[in-house]
Length: 289
Image (cartoon, rainbow, N blue to C red; front, top):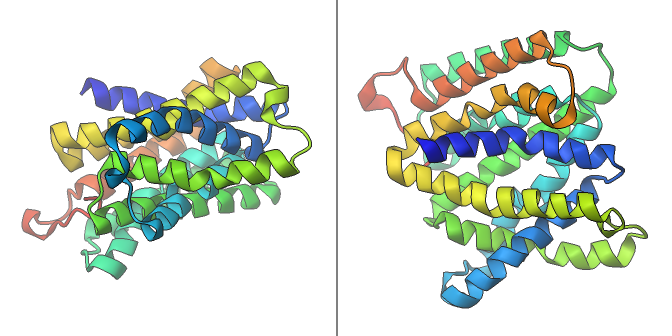
């Protein structure tokens, strides 16, 4: 239980730490580079110790990197440049179980259950509540699109781990090594890098790379091993509700009751999608294994 709570806190703070970097002048390209470097500092020694046999095939590395590597990181952070932070909790996190369920139905034949449809309805209601909490701006749609695509990419990462029966450690190694070519483009093309803001750059390297890119993913996998997939994913469902409170403590942003109410509904939606309480026990098929 302790590991699950820590994992929820880590993911709940992710958007606030990313936004702190954006507010100091970094952009999504800078934060993505910091994440790759931070993760590489941990993963490369692990790979040297464990050996190359644990590395997935080139094809698997490419697809896993697309799902949870640089493309995912770029879109997830870019969305924060265009939409309120509460939108990432509702879309980037909230859509993952539903996207996984519908994609699992298409590619693995998993059942689309009554619980999934109820969860979808509650998620749409949550989005309406969150949207009503802020003045409408067309630019928010661009941010929401970034969040939704990033949710689809993350769902594809989980589905591909399941498809190829890879461990969470193999997934971390794959997305880190697969993302490293991005650094060549970043340091060659960019006139100014995150190194120019050393303190914030080190923070992003540590949090995005080490905490999120390595520890959080491995921690989540360990929770699944200890308490099973259903309860493990229930802890992840807590993360969206924590976002406005993390923004208050990390960024000093005011807590909006509309965001809190909407993100609570997101948690309810994710919990229903994960636990499937409205389905007969024998019909439930977990699409996240």
